[in-house]
Length: 603
Ligand code: SF4
Image 1 (cartoon, rainbow, N blue to C red):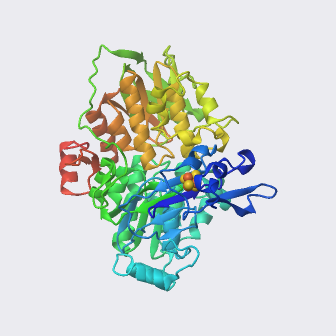
Image 2: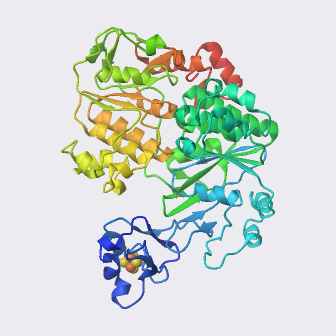
Image 3: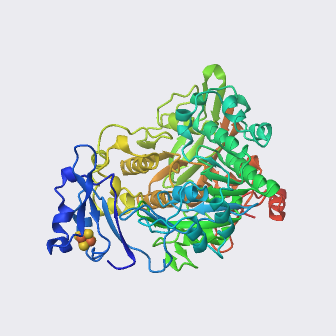
């Protein structure tokens, strides 16, 4: 095989009991008597036939690819590594297994960000930086040992750090990615969990700033996603270690809570000279939070590359442009572009529907919601923003007749295709069967280009809905919502569980769909980038979470964002080069000037 190619076999997918080794039978070197595709010499599981192994010495590389075509389960990838990738991997799990190139470089007193999709080696990188995994520099048969690893990183930003790891001198606190799994590993209440972690004596202040007080005596089992996320953050930041690793801080949090989390992390780095490494898919928060940024790219499950550190501004701009300048690497065919003003013009004459004043209260009036009457226009994307617990999803349920209002008539006499906040498609049915039952466009070239490709559905079409991860389920639910024929499409939190690449692709799929189908779309979300790219107008919810919510009429983007951000005391500006929204540093000159002018959204 050419030096720059690798063969990767996904052993979760390889099922030789169901395919009769088609790959092995058709492999050209095998047919001439060579041992290119062989058996591993061990049963896959008890009683199951042996899975395959591919010799990277003998394989002809991507120009052949016959086994990739023949495998009915998409278990094989033959990949030409980018020729710009000249270094050895930091670690490879074995022949035909995942390789990681490059490592992030944490720095004392700094927040280092990583930006890139899931599945390309961040866990491997963290295990190496924590000293749990000795990197093998790609030599899985003859492990090099820490001294040789240190030699390989001599003269780089990582030299000092790796010296400390080799000497066992690094302590680490980490916040897990999936906070909803915390109740599986901890029995007890919030106070018990947090008091075990209070090594810095900072717990009271963390509890106050993250508004955890009301749930201190609650069982961990009973916490919502947003509460678990804040408790996990407090538990991590209360520890006293050299190195803090935070794997996504924003899921389930509203924008105010995201900004608070970002400020706490920055303060710990700046005031206590701690080293923070953050993986984050919300670009606005990453921009606010990080001092330097590594971009990660590759093929999920096959190989991942973590670039050298970049300035945060350049890293995000290059990522959005799809081209990494120093690496001379294209990571996406098309750039993600922001437009300073909403691109579509709509007039008052294009009314799709008018809804009346609505009220709804819950729990003997403990929570009440008031909606001012308003208009949804034809062919617009209407963004809906506001804190958690303020009634946004209740409004969606009123429109879709999943809830009855106390006052007002919410029956809009429209066909509404609705993706709820919590996606519950878990019947035992394959993804392709589920989607083809929704639209007869399924499988057409239009549907494949506009829905399946941007939502990366090809590789999961044959899986069962009940086996999908949170991100896969979200992508199928967005596809199902957009594939239905309807007067109005309503998507509640489409960015949840999506990594940054899936988020930008889903955003452009929704926007393109709205434009090309002249569709009317309502989107509830906390991701400012997604809102900025998608929405023509905004409906703003405010009030007191869990007590009282109120929504005014939909407003033009600028007015809506100004109202929304004024409540949060956060200001944004546009990046000069790309027009993307950027959060101003609190108390910076621009922040103060924009606040005094009442222009929270772009001066
Ligand atoms: Fe054989 Fe390699 Fe061709 Fe696959 S790509 S069939 S392993 S030569």
